[in-house]
Image 1 (cartoon, rainbow, N blue to C red):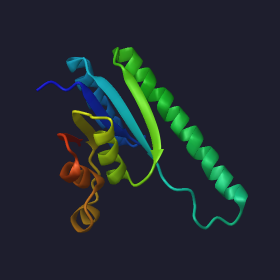
Image 2 (image 1 turned 180 degrees about the vertical axis):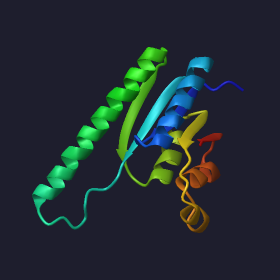
Image 3 (image 1 turned 120 degrees about the vertical axis):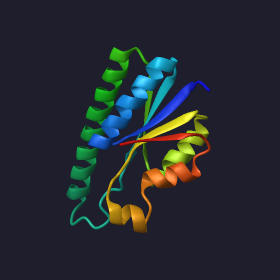
Length: 140
C-alpha cells in the first residue's frame, strides 16, 4: 500500500529529527506529500509578570520559526512537497486529531524513552499508536 500523505510530528528534539529524516526519505521514495505538525506547549500559568509571559512567547516564536525554516529547507533539498502546521495542544490528542482531519496515510513520530513514564503513564508514541486511524511508525 503506497502512502500518499505522511504526517510527521516535530519538536526539534533528536528523536523528532530522526523521525523527520525517516519521514522525508519515505515521502521521497513514495512521491508523497509530507505534512509536519509542530506542537506548542502552554505559556507559563504562574508568571510573575506579563513581561515573563511575553519573553516566553518570543522565545517560542523564534524557536518554531527556526524549526520551520530548517525542515522546509530539508524538504526542498529533497524535492518533497512539504507543509508545516504549528498548533498548541496536548501532543497525543493533537497528533491523532490532525492525522484524521488531514486524512493522512501514515503518522511518523519519534520514540521517547523514559521507562517509568512510559510504563506508568504511557508515552505520546504509545497513545498515538493506540488511537490513530492509520498506521503509525515510531522511530527510535
